Length: 85
Length: 460
Image 1: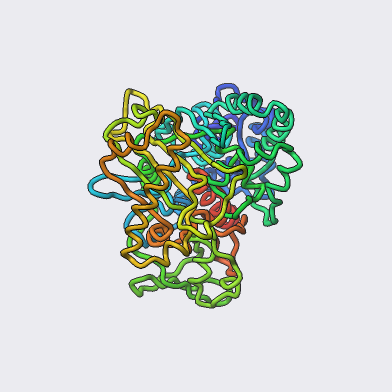
Image 2: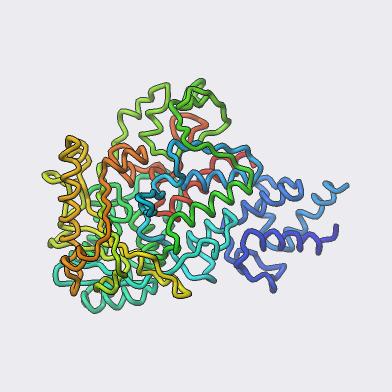
């Protein structure tokens, strides 16, 4: 999986849990919280959906790794590749 | 309703969830009943916390996201307009906060700056925290923040009526929650009332794989090693569960615990209950002059919020609700007119009556409540209301206790809330009115928060 594909997966999950957010122009290097109305409940759900849909575990200590789309891709792509291997 | 929301959260992340409900109708304190072919909502005057589509913050948005429910599924139609009515003074408000602000400026010109400062403080205040700490008294804080006593009373009246479990006062946390829910956000109602919301929740719960059993109460919680080991059902069957979330109230839950925790003796039962009179009309209420959605009234210099000591009801204050007066859209109108009046009522008084007197007092108090309310509706004549009344209903603290199981008919639960939902047992948590969030949206948020905090976040 490429980092771009990984970002799309994260965006798809956000679209599912926050259908009222406009995701057409999310900047990859800006904190998601600063450009979208996402709170800790939404981040919990991003983690839960990653697990439910893709079998990926994100321990609570690693939640800060999900701050931006870029950091998500950095952190999650190896996990996706490990799961798919 | 809080239990359904918790159930949806857990089921959608793959938990095996079973909801046990003693009653034959779902919804708990936010339920409905049928009488002679008519359906009545139990508690729903208004869904508070209403924000228009497109707003992306606030409790209503949070619960829709967390439960994966579309905003349009709830069919929330905004109110026409409401009012706080005191002798000689009115504060009108609707879902646009600017109206209340201009009303405060009109009626209390010298207090408008203090009011604006208080509002900024409320906007910044985090009222959905789950920390277990005793919140300060709203009255104490308001005494400093708003020097005009009359204004304080007029703000406290609607907010206490819509959720305070404490006589004469409320926790500041709850004041903030309700101020946001009622004034900064607003009122709405689905065309079908609370049934719509319950149906949406039940459908989500089913889709997520949750199970439920109706008319199946829990008789006791067996305890071993500081945990609930088994649940004994009303029919004698035993079931086991890793976690138990109880939405029946704190004291009610503790009394089910077989280890007889000492807290069951120490927790104060909720001292406040209500009576409600409902007139079903053969014309739209607006044609009789009732065009507002909710009117909170009080006829005395200060607002007394407590259980009536020498009477069955307290007619000095109350809440008038006209469910017809929401913008239902597409020219939809309710088939009949409804005129509902809520008043503080004495649990001890109502339950102490022998059956025959109980029925007679219900009729007498119905008339007193309607008469009392009409005083605050200029242009509305009691005789006209009566002439157009097809049928009536009335519920009392006794009715509430009987159908919801809440001790003393205390719809807002015990005065002291348990924000984190913990009990003396490791795997038993509370959600709903005694956890401390308020209203229909608050009930759902309570269930969601407790499922997240104790189960989903901890164990995934």
